[in-house]
Length: 178
Image (cartoon, rainbow, N blue to C red; front, side, top):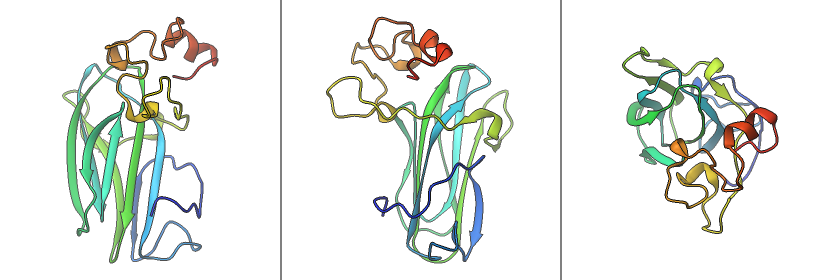
């Protein structure tokens, strides 16, 4: 389950083939789960295809949108989903994975018209992650595509948290990482 924390670390990429093992000697080889939280930064203003190759289940959210939802027991399988991204914008990313039995594999890749398919490189992944809920709708920002409920998708909203200050200014100054 995703409720008991046995290990916390920052991974530079999601590119794991533990075979019949697990992420750590402290974790058994079967019936474990992993949660990766962070931000991803696209290099191009394009539609990106995100891929998760896993055994067993996986769920991926980017910018609050469910991109892949395959929470099922399965042999190693690759799933994909698409989302328009903006160059230079850091977007929340949430990847859940569970291993039931057998081999344990978790890989996160992407591609676009200008970006050949590759494991998302560490240069495009960031560990900071927005766990706030800017409005009382019960959806934390990483799963909410309109954080301040103003009717504008966060990707196109210059003030994503609705506090009257431009979000890029807040991010650059480190005062409010929305």
